[in-house]
Image 1 (cartoon, helix red, strand yellow):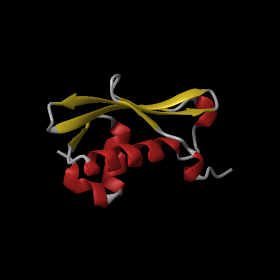
Image 2 (cartoon, helix red, strand yellow):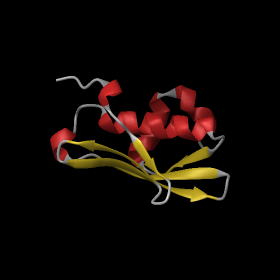
Image 3 (cartoon, helix red, strand yellow):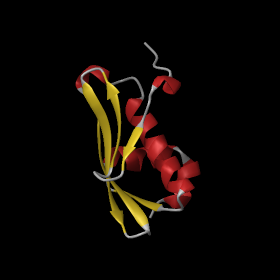
Length: 97
């Protein structure tokens, strides 16, 4: 089964430092820590088991990295998934620290 990315309505909860989307099994989330106005430390990605394998984590990663780019933040990819995503997507390597 293929999930169409455009069906995902990703939200940004700036107060709780979180990008999230409702999916089967709960919320898929990408957590971060904001360091002044310099960079975002992308710390953890989670997708409920019932929704894994559909590219949701990659879509969250892309959303967060585009948010960082649009707001002129660098990113620290502390989360292993995000680190791997950036290594496979060279367009984002220029914002990684």
